[in-house]
Image (cartoon, rainbow, N blue to C red):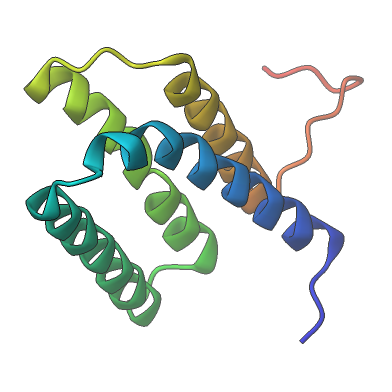
Amino acid sequence: MTLTRRQWAQLAVLSLLWGLLAANELQSLAGRPIGVLWLQAAALSWALGTVLMRRSALPAQASAFSVMAVPLVGIAAATAIVGEVPQISDWLAALCIAVAIVSATGRRVRSDNPAP
């Protein structure tokens, strides 16, 4: 299977997103095995949710949108529940997620066709 240019761009944005979100967290998890276990449990539940979402009747775009929105919920929940203040890397990651979601929907924004 050959990836299209759009898929390569999505992969690049996703990689950047992962790096931005993981950079600060990996340092703070060093020497905390319980935190690493929670992190792994969250990743496993996200992966399971993605697989189950693919098997449902939802179209691929809706599935992609909902899966990519999970980190946004995580950033908001960390702020609301734990009181964590988002760092610049969190804001950049949120921007990457927004770009990925727009890319996944396949819509093109044209400057000569303004939104209603």
